Amino acid sequence: MCEKSCKPSPVVRAIITLLLVLCALYRARAQQNNSAFQFDPSATVNVDITDKVRMELLVGHEDSEDAAKNRWKVRTGLSFRLKPLFRSLLDGDPEHDKRHFLVFKASYEYSRSTYSEVTYNEHRITLEATPRHRWPGKILTSDRNRLEFRWINGLYHLRYRNRVRAERGFRIKNRTLTPYVSAEAYWDQRYNIWSQVKFTGGADIPLGRKMSLDTYYERRNCTTCSPRYINILGASLNLYFKLKH
Image 1: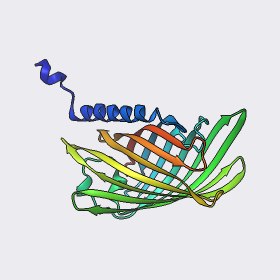
Image 2: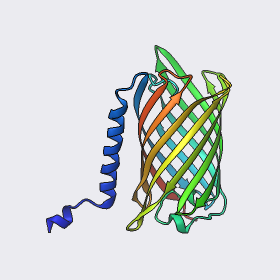
Image 3: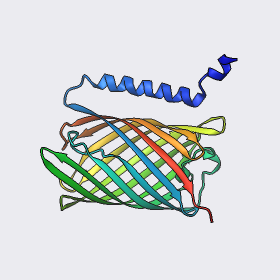
């Protein structure tokens, strides 16, 4: 009787397997020169005000240009979603943004850090648009285009980010486990070049109807950063709520 009751669920086994893979990748990169490592935890509360409007509040670690800066951030924003097109594809996934062909979002973010006895304060306003497309094989792709208006200690500059992501959900009982890969490029006005690119692999793991855990490994190559390469293990807890009308 204990054999059945003590057997881990498919979701627990998937989490353990993913964490083992991420740890192996993390250790493999530890031998490389000119690279650094960091762990980026975060938590996000998403509240659907209506079927088309969502409010977001995030607290987490900042993926900054300088790995030596221990920077944390707070972000709040609103998103507007067009009519859903992929409802049947994503049943069981608590992230309803994925069901919509196009999502617009505006947000404000504040971060603060101290490095070499100098305090850095950043205020950031972001505007983004994310179209999605469904491919054969139940593969869903998204193309996030983000403009960041940044003020770091009062100095302003613009940054553009483009992230392409591919994912495929797998049903486990009445939940959807979603592995994904993505690539993101940054154009920075300060240098007038495409200064960095990030490659990410991970999985969105449902923990309930209103909760999911996004775990991932990320590799960043930044020509204007010190160090140039950063390896990141991340875990983001996402909570989803809907206002009653």
